Image: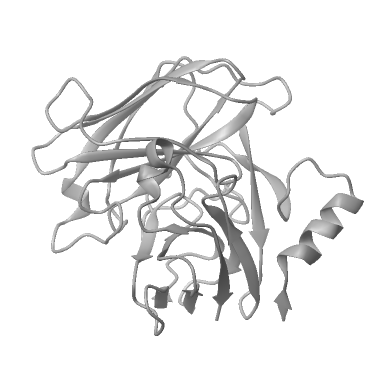
Length: 290
């Protein structure tokens, strides 16, 4: 079944929803599981929503890329006007950290490679928060921001991430964060428009352990990029030009490590340049999950 963007927007307008996307849900704060794949899963966690580390003001956590392909997601809540600082500092010599910040609907707010105090460490300093919202931090590395780990053991790639200056909005329940996605089922497709307002799109679907899924994102106008995360925030796959059409991203036959919700980010190849350069061209992407 194919769903057009205009159909979704008409439905949302009729319901007077605040955001021009498909659905809005709240996710529980992670209670200890930060990896994916065969990492232990807390039985109290609801696998049908994202369960990411949720950072409070001044909080630091130690993480690694174990059970990931070289990237993971964390979250924080912040209020309009907050000036938030996010740092990612490697705790071994094999990692060149890289940070990207998204709001809850796919606007890319900031990215950084080497601005931290330590050589190669990343620092996004005094980011002015545009609205009361939840925010995603993509913690990755310079070499894996658009590609998977190549021969490295993610368990050895360790780092500390810190968020400060954020004040949780009153309308987001404590210990939760909000996000908006296109909610699809395996076998569905949708036309998604990548624009200056929405340079990235979030898509969720429910999968079972051992399922093999293919995500495709051809476009006549864009060089697309896809990233796929499990519900703990571990990135399990990424692709730039693997599709059959020129410059089309395709994650082919990805084996799902867990039963639960999966979170895909659809964007374009140079997404990390958006905060400084904006979008080179807008376009429609024919996204599908098989």
